[in-house]
Image (cartoon, rainbow, N blue to C red; front, side):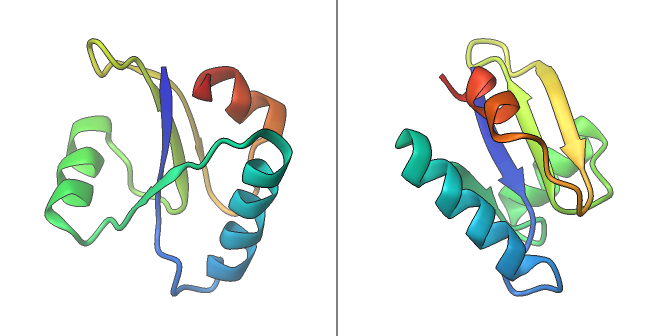
Length: 87
């Protein structure tokens, strides 16, 4: 399982997002990948998973890529929820 973040760090939620991701890394050592929705990879992910709100945290299976959980919007999931899927 893996978790990626689809969002922009240079946005109104960017500072909060960077702080949140820094907290995850300092508490667990897990570093989540941030994918800009305006890049080819980001556009493809958004189309594939029906993502229209940012930031979105996407937990997916590594073998099939199927979505296991998503959290969207300015209210971030609890860190333990992210870590469950990130390990």
